[in-house]
Image 1 (cartoon, rainbow, N blue to C red):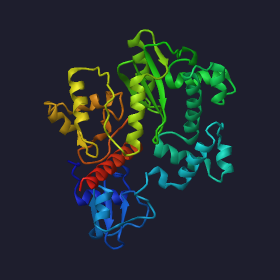
Image 2: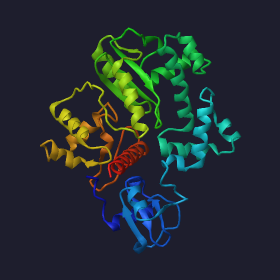
Image 3: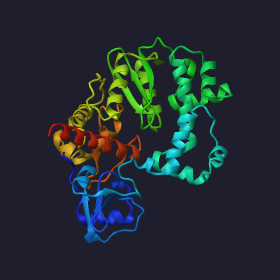
Image 4: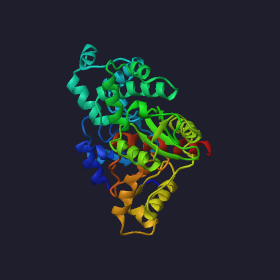
Length: 357
């Protein structure tokens, strides 16, 4: 089942405070205007008696409400900001450009405002995002057997040392260390919610994380040690399968992941991960619900640690775990991304239900 919404008083207080914890988890339908909004909508706040709260956009539409033109609840929160949408489009047009604050100003935007907006929505600045895009170009050149100097130029780095340093900050190793003959190999997978790094062997997927996750370097370092010979670069069968399944997922065609996964960890950790995979797409659970499911009702903290230790994002859906009060809680990939993943899956569930009516 979908997680039960908090009571009306709690949600109305969240609406007044524009509390981002509930963004994407609840929507308000306003009887006096006939529109439905995000709880973070900047419009004048309606009276409490005119508000009805629902967990999904589909419920709001079924009740006859239309989408607000201020907060655009049908869009991802980030894309509802015209400045963010315009700069993301510009980045797609010129991924090779060495973006600077001067470029941002030339497009008529205030750099400090852009910096805050991107930091709030994505956990990184626009310039940091642009730098990652350039690194992707270099990574993909190496993946097809290109030389390091060619990869450096493809990534638009003038300095070889700067390219090596940027690569090492992200992956924990120099570009030249990523050889194609390793048992474990890394692949870069672009997605609509940001690029991901996948690491696989010939038989299993060992890691799948967004490249801006703060813990990625530590996770890669542990795999480097475990593999003894380090991580190489290139695509193997499990990472090819993962890329195809992610394509279907983000296109809202399927939330089924059949890629074989390499799962380590303690007994309780593995039980928690199995429980996460049992949560249907479009639904959520709390940490306490997972604890009861694995037979450890008093081990909520252990469940939270196991959830945080997951290094195979989406396929072990730790983003489907939320707070006991229905609010979004910490997610290594960023709360904005957690919100969008839940929205994608609810849309997928609604589409499937309509198909089988």
